[in-house]
Structures are given as C-alpha cells and as structure tokens.
Length: 127
Image 1 (cartoon, rainbow, N blue to C red):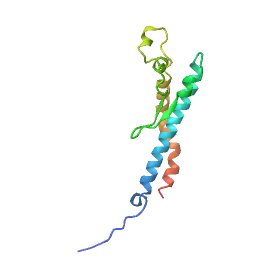
Image 2: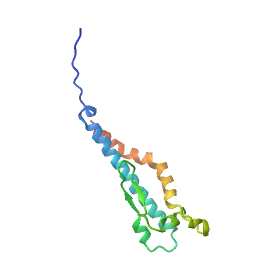
Image 3: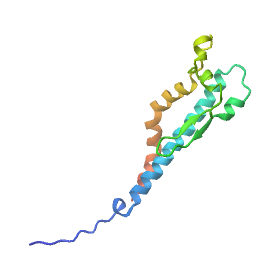
C-alpha cells in the first residue's frame, strides 16, 4: 500500500482568496452605486425645469444587506411622479423623466466593464 500526505497551502486554503473576493464584491457594489448616483444627479440637472435642490439633495446610496446597493430618492413624496411611475402621471400631461430607469439601463450595460477595471488588484491579493 502506498501512503502519502497532502499539505494544502495557498490562497484558497489559507483564506486569502475568500477575503479578496469579499473585498472585491464590496468595492464593485460601492463603485456601481456611486456611479449610478452620479449619473442620476447629472441627468436630473439636465431635465429638471425649476430645480430647488431639495430633490437632488435626497438622492443617495443605501446599502442593503445581502443585496446590491440601491440608489434612491429617499422616499420623497413626489419622486414617483417625477419618475413617471405614479398614478398621477396617467391623469396629467407630465409623463415623468424616467431618470432612475434610464440610468439603471445605462449602468447595467456598463457594469461588467466597470467591475473588470478593479479585478486585477484583487487577483494580486491572492498570491
């Protein structure tokens, strides 16, 4: 009978890989959310007719445990009307700006490229 001993070592076995993956996930979540927030604010600056600054000041990133971070208007009462998702939009000429929906589509289409920008530094942590 042949016997041998196995001594696993390296980033997968000593925990470095999982630490790097968790840090990478956190950074990508943060970068995507902050990019989304910036895009929403930029678009609002282009579409709002008479901005007071109040609505823009409420746009923020909220972290959600176990989920992606969310860009929100903080629950401003007229937010759905500005977005165009309120029942009031059905009865008025104003159909909304669709700011968050437009930004979501743009952000989703560029998410992989943004995530890949940060990947090399995290792969380096696994050596």
